[in-house]
Length: 255
Image (cartoon, rainbow, N blue to C red; front, side, top):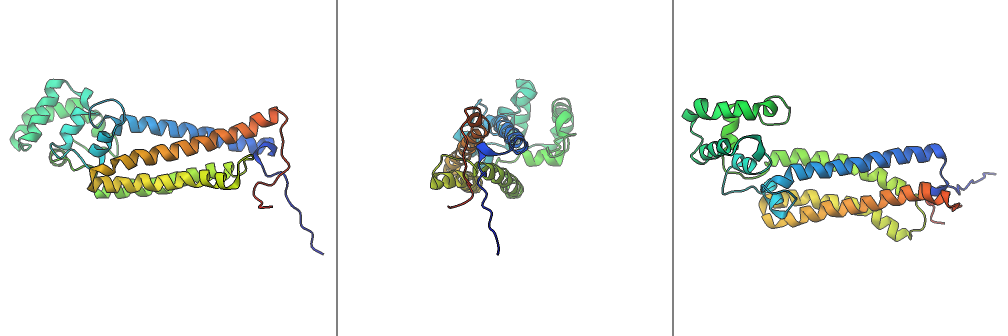
């Protein structure tokens, strides 16, 4: 005769201390990572239009580009504005606008690049090595935003990497109590849906600038849903037991 043992303790308030420590450590690190990611976005995309703060224009410049000027000009008016003097920036911008004349490179442009740009761009992997004329020629062309190869590379990294983060946040939150099943399911699914919207909008903005609004909507949507799940999980693991509130329920069972 086969016996069936039904687990009754699979809920956040009733977890053992080691499991709570494991889940809490993960949620705190992931939460901090999301904050740092937001700061990184503000320092990169958020300065694309030369003004502090993330705007629709920043998204457009990042993915569609500023097709009235070069990528070099956009960077010198935006996130790289303070790396050289205004006079030096103007010289570089004028050089790009006039067709990036090779004759001016060695005597006028290269010394500025070596003094103000090479410290990072010649030594940090992933950054374009602007000390090379052929690289600068590409950057000095009309700014068409992110390339399709760059979008492909960043998209697959985000889809795989961030999906794992949302999976474990959702897995922990699935043990929460006090939520109706449909509400819990909606919260768990929301970050994945908004992640798809976010990354799909990168590609659509590359083709049509008006889709930039959906990039902001996507990022905001999965950030809010993740924040709700993280704080709800931490509250139920630590605050509810302190109030002597416990549950004898298996949250992974439909019964």
